[in-house]
Image (tube, rainbow, N blue to C red):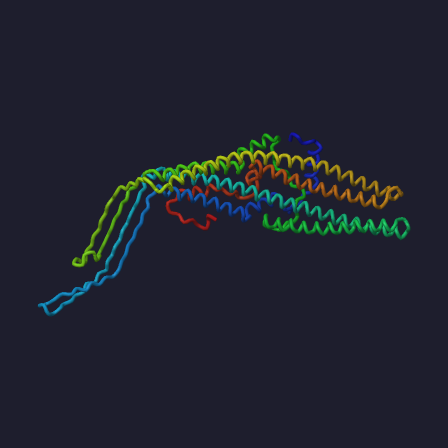
Length: 465
């Protein structure tokens, strides 16, 4: 990897080889796989993508016929009154069961291009939804990486702070013994007590920080953190910033989503224009009536009427609403065009920042390893010199503090190195379960699309979830 010192490379190798293998260790890859399969936010993003697939089927319905059937059935009683010999009246009653039915089929022939525009717009929005899904996948996997490494760092920090309290406690006992023997002063003991109290306060803070990281780990990944690996292996990364940028410009979900939304906006203009064009359709209609009270002197009739008509609708003026929709669609297209430019610029900046962040952390590991080694040697030397009367107890306390700071810095830089590597992978658009080779069943959005986007009759099933 260009731009990385040999010292940094050796340091990283030492970090990765220092940890012994544990058969039942819950690795970072295990955590990412669990988050991929069980994270509810990612599951919601998949459902959103499936909904976009169904919008394609809805748009394609504009090409297809619509069939409607209506009917009614009832009871009618008709009383007839008449005169007999000018003096007597007669009456009779007729009972009817009027039945009416109608079946209508409408087949669009020409929609002014709206059916095509709406279908293509829906397809473009499917691509945008898939880009959003890819972005959600990357965000969840990166959040899982960060939660994992936060827990590793904070657990290591807690270990170091506990060790510091133990060391200072022993130092305090030794100082008290020296004070009783006249080899130390009361001030030496007070300085040790101050450092010990501060170490205990930092230990309490470290315990709180680890508890928060563990809670976040469980929320994102789906289980409590146990037996984590201290130094996960780094993913394969490009050797130069130019290669990383090339990956990003090709694979970034931000760019893909912006381009898809721009294409959808273009078809949105076509759809708005289509509303001002003629529309034609064929209408087949069948009407049936039985015992209908259309003529009070003619009962018990049955009739069926069938007709086929061609309908043409030519919009002339709609109060300016259609023109306003066209202007609105054009402005929306202008917005998405700027969105493409912004996505390109933002992606380039993110790659540059991620590249710098990762390589800074990578070199920091080497520097902090050297710092830890030097602080340990310095502490040993100060202790020996204090025994010879050349150094004070305060010098030992300062040296111990330097060693603790160096060890905490090394732990933090290891954390930043791994997180930075996955952040760079996300900036390239390659932080996916497939790229990482996670042992999971990969979610394929094409499966639902092929099954449902062209369906004529389909209510879905529980399997779609």
